[in-house]
Length: 432
Image (cartoon, rainbow, N blue to C red):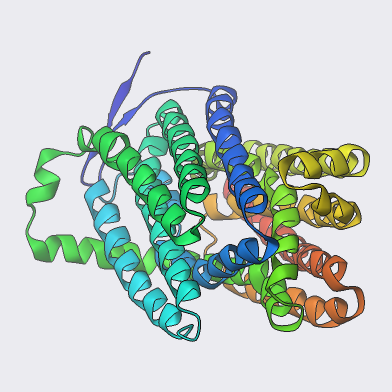
């Protein structure tokens, strides 16, 4: 493979491994697909070896920790992957990610302590937070590899993390029956992949001098990154609240068992997000370059292609849910979950709208329209919360599945307006 070392006006030289979008997408899709199957397997293992209440306990921990961790991670991977001018070193991004995750874990431990009436729930919340924090440390390594178009290494890592994690979880849960012990083993398995593969991949690519700069220079760089990335953290936190708002309503009004049933079904529908993310992550560097070069036609065409692929994936999912959904649910979980096929169809429709909205979000991020995404997500959260408040008391879990679809429609409408502004700006640049 031919590589090109491009000297940049910033602080480093980026090794570019040129590959086509199709090649990158194929590599990352394999990794994301295996990882998605492993996420299904986690729910399947919990459902088959445990009870809906156990699934609900795990789902509640995810819902509680996700907004905190999303704010902390700030989508630094995308900021790094679109830093095509090499303004900051990888070590600056990695250090900022580590510091922010430490702060997030401190807050999560406080939240877990508030569940002191049920010590087992507190332990599960803390462990789920720790597992997700570990995932985000690997994620920042992916950003460096993504910047260099080294998608194969990302795919290998995701496959290893997914397979080893679910095997460790399943084995420990089968042997002990303890969710906490199973989560510890899953964390250790994924930590091993990070230390043995992810960290080693990027260590060889970091400039040796980057680790020996004065602390004041590193702190200044991290503050600059924080200022740029914090809006994305707020956007991701709001996005996590959007996703989990129906779960909060279910937990408070319907109970842990119903939350477990809903989470198991909805996770099956939402698994397509991992394919969506593989396309979005693969396309982000190219979208950023098209925008930076002022290529209106190329940027718009690629954005429309991504939206069309998201819509196609959603329609395919709805058709699959309506025809073979019951059989899939019974095979992945238990036959009792297959009675919720109507819920699966509604959830798939809501996720289909979300697929398109997510892909357009990557386009907006590549254009560096970061602050505009905050009011966008606030509107989306308001729409989702209002829909959950209205629908769940009337229609139960089906109403809970409808709520994210309402939020995604609000998001889609706002993103269309932002993208119109982006394209208009590119057109004005071409005329000048």
